[in-house]
Amino acid sequence: PDLALDRAAAVRWPPRRAAHLLGGAVLAVAVLLAARAGVGLSTDLALVVRDSAGLTGLAALGAAWCGRSCAWLPPFAALALAFVLPPGPGTLAQVLTWPMLPPGTPVATWAALVAAAVGTAVYALGGPRR
Image 1 (cartoon, rainbow, N blue to C red):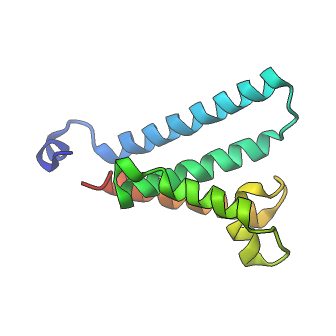
Image 2 (spheres, helix red, strand yellow; image 1 turned 90 degrees about the vertical axis):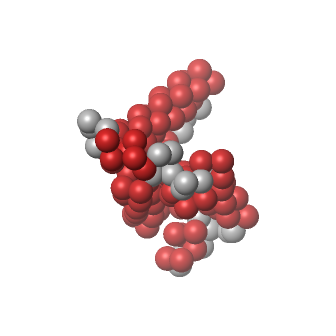
């Protein structure tokens, strides 16, 4: 990463970074849907899209916060926490276990949307940690 190069670019970097994240999320959804169709699983499309968007946002937040070599830490931590904690009726429990909740859960959808929006905004505006 070079700040002088970022300033001299003909096209601004924030739209490029946001497009890279969107492309990565679309690729993740496509691969998961192809794998789902190949094995004959009946996973809901809304669940795949929600979790892909939220985890991509967490990976972007990790790249901006921890650097590109440790960008995997926030999505891994979110999935590990969702696997370990039992889902409960409380809002905090639903926010912490959003990747494992059914697709119709509003709290899980909002948690994924917030993770995607915040992660995309932080990464697009600031880029990866230098």
